[in-house]
Length: 463
View 1 (cartoon, one colour):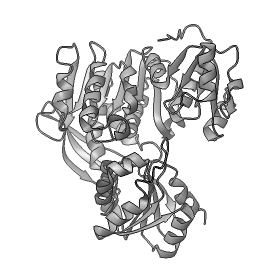
View 2 (tube, one colour):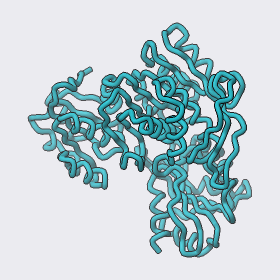
View 3 (cartoon, one colour):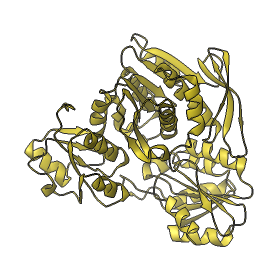
View 4 (spheres, one colour):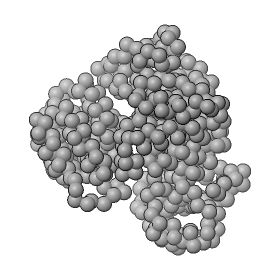
């Protein structure tokens, strides 16, 4: 594998530079004095921001974008071998790195690196870690999978030994990371187009655990089903295992969890069975109380004081699209946007919504990928059925093609069988008109999914 010498800036080119992670990595290199260019299929706020920072961005991916002065190329998993730029780079024999390989090399430059993994909750927990590091004035480098208001973006380049990033399991990309502190929040069925079954997913997380640096820490959810498999994977390594959760026996434990009227949790923190006082969060839901324990454990492990941890957690309002309040319509309905696109995530978000909604709960749901919808159809219906009304958009294809085996109409059928008022409307305009006509004062609409369903809320609030 090609090794980047960060002490000798050269020219790096990013294929797919408009992605959340890729754009952040490009900015890291730019601030380190590298010449940076890249390409994407369409212009966006992200590409415009990169250009304003002196990065050349090509719209469209063609062979002519690959110039003679490029020293190495970084590309995403979404780039196929028949991509014109990819083919040209191969033909020229320019060194290539996947996004994960490059991020792993970036991480190696930091002594106190923290990688946040898990099927659910990565972005919010990374946000917690970021706020704690900022509160402690460690001047960290932060790479996160969403817009974080505290850093006005998804990347912050610091000048210290502190680094925190999300660690995504898809295509085993996080196996390239060698973190000082590795966090595993949970292990659940997802990305079955790649993993095929839960056994493969659990094995993947166990392998991730083994990538932790010698002398580092593995911070793992002690309540989850696959904890022993993950812990056993590092039993012969010089890695400290730290568990967290609700159950007795975990080193970091949350007791007496309760939610306020906004769904924000407060709980009593116990460390090694000793009461350490209350922790209050500004993110929502009991699941985030549990996830915050991992951030506390990692922060203490890298030497951050408890006062900074407590205050950082209180200031953390998470990244965009994580149960984010967007506004109130002219009819008095509250609009919330949420990135949830897996049944477990949906259940967690709707539990918060049910606790705070004043009238009817609506969900405008856009399923994300055909393979995920097909694999979890029954579970999606069960999770969504706690709503009063569900408005269904067409499936967001992302990297997949429609083979005709599943559609949002199938989900509508399952919801109706469960007695939930569900209607398939397909396009966003129809969803907006339906909600405008039928919503009432104090209703809540959650635009839900990892695609572009959030635009429904934007349109409703503009009227």
